[in-house]
Length: 328
Image (tube, rainbow, N blue to C red; front, side):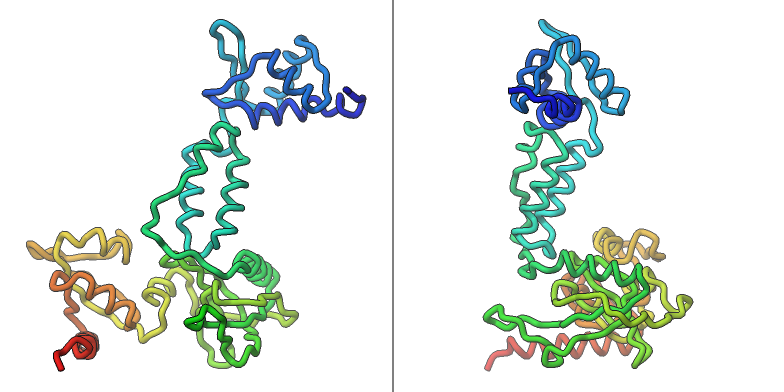
């Protein structure tokens, strides 16, 4: 039965009805709006509905009229359009840092940003080549704490672990917390990394966020870092694949059909020199297994030209790997 309190909420519920039940393909007649309002214990007359629609338009809702055999109304535009929500859902489902549980929770929230009819189109499986999902449920809250520490100019405290073959956590430093100065969060190769400054060794270190636990804002003030020494973008570019190693200036050679892969890794602004059916680039990179593995995937279509020390490291790696497959 309608109550005075419910009647005061009439305009708010009508806005919800437009947001949840209408879109370009699904419109409501005035009589259907009256019926929908009655579900919330609210009575309404046709004349008042027209007035309410005008108020909602004045508020900013893009309510359009559709005229056929009857007059019906729908919400024509929203903060997020359906293609944008589909893109976000795809990103959530394919992200390796978000657990299955959190993925489902996020997608449910994203579905609430469109009509119930369009929300059904968001509930679809994305082909992600069976990318493994994270199993660390606390990543969300770790990121929150890291942002809070950075914005407050404080250090953070956390424990860092590796996984054993039985999926149990093996904490480094016998579970003793790390106390570090957080500088920036970085997304690289579908993983989140925290870049910290280690004042003891006057160096920058990286930690996988999904392998951090018990992350809290520490009471100690963050160490002062000379920003002239630290540029986030430059640092990420140099530390290839976020694995530590000596930074070297290298000349790399690729067949022309690898240009997309090179641009994906080094960016489209990388300077290159073309020589017929191949090209060369000069870049700074970290001498690491990640880099060598990236180069090896291209077989004889890619080559380290210089320096000779980097070529020697590649030869040594290939020799060690080939030894695993030698005949006995």
